[in-house]
Image (cartoon, rainbow, N blue to C red; front, side, top):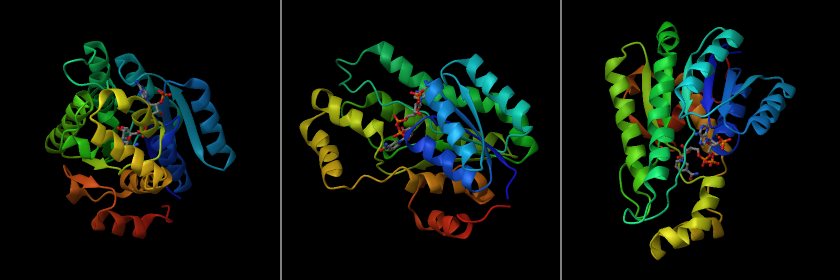
Length: 261
Ligand SMILES: NC(=O)c1ccc[n+]([C@@H]2O[C@H](COP(=O)([O-])OP(=O)(O)OC[C@H]3O[C@@H](n4cnc5c(N)ncnc54)[C@H](OP(=O)(O)O)[C@@H]3O)[C@@H](O)[C@H]2O)c1
């Protein structure tokens, strides 16, 4: 079994929770981070009940003190940090630039982009020790624009660049950005609720159709892939922007998905 320790942000629900469950099932110790303290504690307990090693650290990724505390708690509890999965994220504001609330835009920037930078910075001394991996959960919207999503597109595009900058600056750390596909989580539910107001009709309808046709991915499908990447992504992929379902990624998953070490 692996004794590696992975920090997973946004682990209270959705994709992040699935990554934590899968990483624990692969034998990793998981430090789970999100703001919903009770929910997070319950999910960490569920993982421990299933035989895994899990620690709940409640906090807000946009706050420097919380990022530093997450690293300290992980170190005092597990004694090492091998990987971070920067998964915590928000979509809002869903509104055209002409109408978007700058305060919500700023919150998006701090959650989706500044938060990952602050957490990586706090954990770097430990990541270097273990030749660690940093996985940035990105989006197709990092590379093309969706009307009504200016903050999300800008911060996910920025996250890809943060990942590339980390790759060239830190020789001992492997950094990747990964698009997880379109996943059946609360973020998708939010699009279906708020999208009618803030998005053009055609773009909004596309997301309604994906749900109606059952074409959204269950979180555990890309979640399992992200857990394998956090543990085993090859060094040669350093700096790459990957899609969860591309062949080289799924080949890695087939190789490692049931293996601990
Ligand atoms: N769903 C999709 O189709 C899709 C597609 C492409 C990319 N993604 C990306 O996948 C990641 C996970 O999204 P999801 O779909 O699972 O969404 P979700 O269900 O809304 O989950 C978001 C998670 O992030 C946490 N979070 C949000 N703001 C936070 C903050 N300030 N500090 C700490 N934690 C925070 C939330 O927990 P608390 O509220 O408890 O803090 C929750 O655990 C995001 O980065 C998203 O952009 C999703």
